[in-house]
Length: 403
Image (cartoon, rainbow, N blue to C red; front, side, top):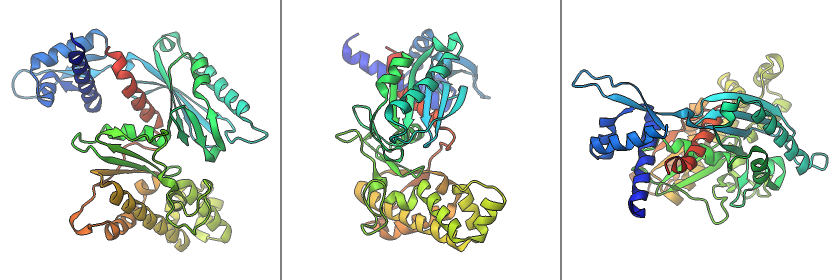
């Protein structure tokens, strides 16, 4: 087969596999209709995929007309992935998952992540490596033999050289990839958490929507821009830091060195810090929830306080919504996307905040009378980072699986 035909065939196989993955189970006739090819062509491709174990037949199509077709499913346990998610300044989650993100094993490690004189890079790296090694070692041999890769999500920037810049952890040029590859013996993927989430969300976007923006408000504020269906990385591999776009140049200082950053108004960590200030100043509703009921001061607690008529918390969240609207206005005016996907506990749990944002956006976008921007919420929940990481890795590995 000539190289061009081989590339075309591989592309078709990847497209078919992705369709099966997203839809969970698909018949051969349905695949033929979707990809506008003959059933015989689909049958040949499926037979090849079955021969290597990537798909299998499972179930019968539910139809009252004609011969019932067998359904094709993706074999999620073809390989496994070792997953690491740095959740915050103290917490590392480790998983072994199948290729669809179903959890095989999980552990939570408490590791001081903030770089300081007392807790230097060598100590932090050593603790991460020890935890990862111990977790990998405890897996059954049949799992170890089928581990395809390791993937870690980072709450910060990861450039083309895999150097990590994470101001919340005080990491300025933190090298982790090579040492992880050395101790796991696996290909290692390190990526910014927002980009990992965005890849997962793009699974569910119609292919005709080529220009999509993914905006995450958790824990900071990050953006991923897809142009012509491809993620824009930037010259250094660190594009998307919209959280540090200044909405008020005379505003409060941000840890990044700027003032009045988008993240200070809408990022979940920033809102929690402001909630702590409200609590210290005195807020009976918030004090009841936190001090008497023992609730953690998080976004959910702030939303409950607002719903219980706390004027101070209501003002805080309304301001967050309006600034989110300002940020959306800038993104739409700059990029004119087909769709913006929003994620984060704040807008998922408080429809008022989302409404404030949309009202603000509609008032200020250019040519507002003839534009109707498509805004939707993400499908990934905050406790499903492992699914996103598996989707991220699977996109990298599929071409290797079908070579």
